[in-house]
Length: 396
Image 1 (cartoon, rainbow, N blue to C red):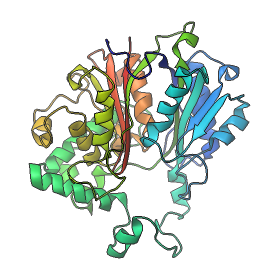
Image 2 (spheres, rainbow, N blue to C red):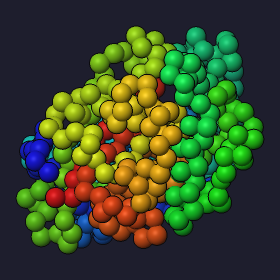
Image 3 (cartoon, rainbow, N blue to C red):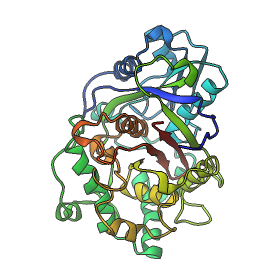
Image 4 (cartoon, one colour):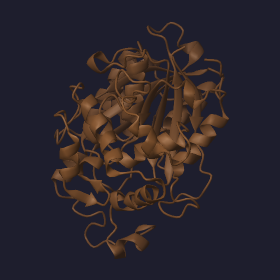
C-alpha cells in the first residue's frame, strides 16, 4: 500500500479477541468483556502489564439494559491495568470511534498498547422483559422520539424503513436485493461455529417471513446476543517484537458533514455513512477499487446497501445493479462481504465484531470461512442513520 494516511503508518492492530457469543448466555457483561480482552492481549503476544491504554464505546450509564456490558473503569479494575490513557463515550464516529481515538493516542505517544472493546449482553437482558418497550414504564419520550413515538415509530426498524423505501422508490432497489444481503450473511454464518443462526436461508424463506416494518422482514433485522469483542491498537515501533505482522490503519472516516439525524438529511437516500466514507477517502490515496474485503454494518440489511453506496463501489443509486451481478460477495468473489455472518446471522456484536472479523481475514486465520482472494486491504464500516465511522486496514 502506498498511502501513509493520517497516522503515517504508526497506528497498527496487533491482536484481536472474542468472547463466547450466543443467545441468553446468562453470563455478566463484565465476564464476557474480560474474556474477550484477555484473548486479544494473548493474541497480540502481550501481557496485561504491557497494556497502558483502555477505550470503549459507549461507556457506563447507558439506560438500555444490556447495551453496554462493562465500562472502561470496570475493565481496568478487573484486570489491574495501569493506564496512561483511557476514554469512552457514545458521541463518537460510530462504534469504531474508540479505535480511532486509540490510533491517535498511540501515534502521539500517549500509550503503546491500547485494549479497545465493545461488549453487549442484550439477549440476557431482554429475557427479563425489561425491553418490552423502548419507552419503558410510561417514561416520557425525549429527543427524536418526541416526534416519532406519537406515530408508533419506536424502533430503528421503523426509522430506517423510511429512507430504505425512498431509495427503493428513487433507484429501483427491491426486496430481493435486500434478501441477497441477508442470504449472503447466512451462508457465511454456516461456516462460523460462533454464529447464532447457521441454518441455510433461501430467497423463498426470506420473502415469506413475517414483516417487521415495511420493507424489512424478520431476516432483514440483526440478532440480539451476548458477547464481547476486543482489539489491541499499538504504536508500530512498540510492536516490532510481536509474533505476527501488524495491521496498519491506513485511513479513518470520522465525518459528520450534516446534522446527526435519522430523517432530516438534504438527500434522504444518503446517511451518516456517506459523511464517514467521504472523509476516509479524503485522507488517503487508496481508492474503492483497491479494497478486496468488506465488513459492513448490517444492523438492518439496508445499512449494508447504504455502506456499499457510500463507499463508492458504484455510482450513487446503483446498488441494485451491483448486487444483481451476483457472486462478488462470496468467499471466492471479488469483494467477500461480512464473512462471519455479520449481525444478521452471526449476532449483534455492534460494530466491533466486524473489525474482529477483518483482522481474522487479513491474518488469513478464517478457517472454513477464509476469503479465497488472500485479502490485503479491508474496509470496516459501522453505524447507520445519524452516526457512522469507518476504517481502512492493510496487511503490509
